[in-house]
Length: 335
Ligand SMILES: Nc1nc2c(ncn2[C@@H]2O[C@H](COP(=O)(O)OP(=O)(O)OP(=O)(O)O)[C@@H](O)[C@H]2O)c(=O)[nH]1
Ligand SMILES: [Mg+2]
Image 1 (cartoon, rainbow, N blue to C red):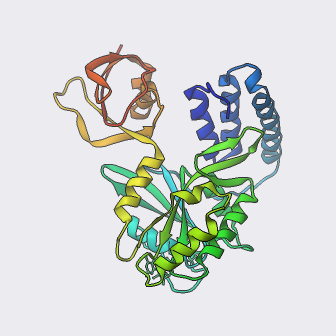
Image 2: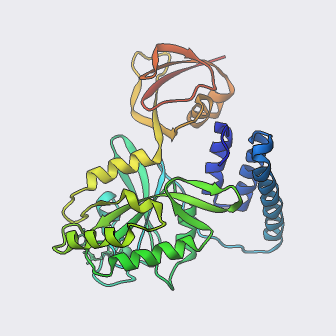
């Protein structure tokens, strides 16, 4: 990825990967092309972007002509979307049930889950959307799961420590995803040589760590994957969704990996900020975009703001392009 990409480019790129419609994709690609620094080092990426824009335009026109283009849609909710994936019976639904308020069917046989199931997880004062998916195997990888991986802010990939086939099954999941254009990676990005190929940030959790054979299987897994080309495998850590061990570490890891910051607002007429409900936005977001989230008019009439936070002195005066940090308190003043 070329250096010196500004945060507007990076935000558009993130939105592009999460886009759920061609129109949205088209809009993001245009922002990316506008914002990309124009120099020799980005020539290739500029050309890729132009190619992709024209392809997307063609697809858009074709889609507009055809009727009834149905697509799977799950509205995004909360501070980010985490998608749980893995082989059949690896404990995905049990994990969704432990992390969130959702009540998926959990059963000791494979292919129980057929459709994606969302739930909301609470971490401190932040809500995060977690989605359970149908299993992935050499001959089973649904369109919905594929679309969800692409739109996810984070993928949670499971290794089943409760089964002797866990390592092999995981290899199948990895092979299946890495052979598609929507791949798993240590960071969310796209391939600068082919922006049709995207990577979604992934962490690997080993499920059923309470199982008696789990330590031996974990050792075996490490031996098998030590020379693996799959970089994500190196951050593996054990969890048990039934005993709860490792779950609070996992929750914290999820929050950290999402890279969101919380912003609290203070009404200029009031003495104390509103600490009840933070606005959760991606790191690198400008204050003016937080204002937009609060109310369109607040952004339109934005004059200046004061910020209290770990990186600034109390009541520092800032403009709309200030990049918010976690736990900032902002007071927005209007014209
Ligand atoms: N011991 C133990 N068993 C677990 C754990 N998590 C899930 N299980 C069991 O593993 C089996 C499969 O769990 P599910 O959550 O249904 O697995 P899944 O990955 O959703 O399965 P599919 O939907 O078929 O792909 C069930 O019998 C669960 O009770 C765990 O942490 N420890
Ligand atoms: Mg399931």
